[in-house]
Image (cartoon, rainbow, N blue to C red; front, side, top):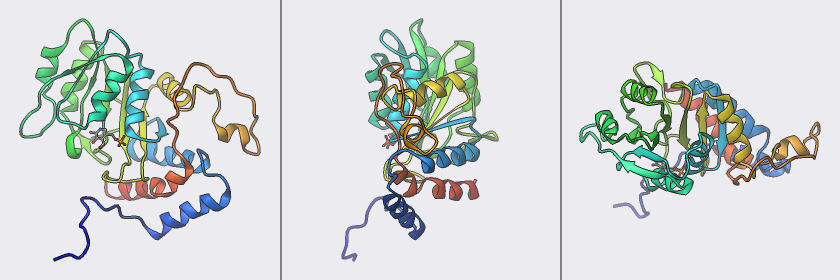
Amino acid sequence: MRETFLPFARPDISEDAIADVVDSLRSGWITTGPKTQKFEKSFGECVGSPYSLAVNSATAGLHLSLLAFGVGPGDEVITTPMTFAATLNTVVLTGATPVLADIDPVTLNIRPDLIERAITPRTKAVIPVHFAGRPCDMQALEEIVQRNDLVLVEDAAHALGASCRGRLIGSPVGERHAAVFSFHPTKNITCGEGGMVCTGCKEAAEKISVLRQHGMSKGAWNRYAATGNPHYDILFPGLKYNMLDLQEGAGGVKGTETAARTK
Ligand SMILES: Cc1ncc(COP(=O)(O)O)c(C=O)c1O
């Protein structure tokens, strides 16, 4: 009999990660900065994504991806009932309406044929969830979104390291596509909290980069670093969804290196 409570998913935090967090605290640079940038680069290389944007949760990443592809009031977004609340909450927060297509009881993933049946003239996007890291049938989903001119946002919160028919989850699928990963403590790697948006779409990446930090044309690192310039513009109203260097230190680059070794 254990004396202490057995947690559902106790994160494995290395001494290196603890030292990295302490290093950030001592350096005086604790918000978004060089460590977050390094994490974005290493994560993009790990999953084969041209653009990777670190955010403070997968919830934030889903919200930003939908906004960047213009999902809003009057649109319908088809997704799965077998997920966490964040998938649907972020759709509702854009003003769009979530429409549920049922799952395959064996894979627990959304059924492509039921997505097709749920499509209406108002359908703008599809959000499949790779439940527990088991990839959805991406070939079928890609055909559906291309044939119907839809946005595809993969909820890849559980799916770092997963692949479908040789394609890593996180690498590009068509033009209007993003995949969003979570670094919550119960996920494959953790930063305490955190998320990453991966996309091959340059315009979406630029929009997400600005939207995640108030709509500012430049982040703090570009303004206050030695070579930075303090001037910035507010390009449009944004949110406050940036990842901190402190969070990265807790498991970002190191976690990605472990994930890359186990691919
Ligand atoms: C399928 C799914 N999507 C999104 C999220 C939200 O992730 P986060 O906690 O990083 O916002 C979760 C979290 O558990 C999840 O399981």
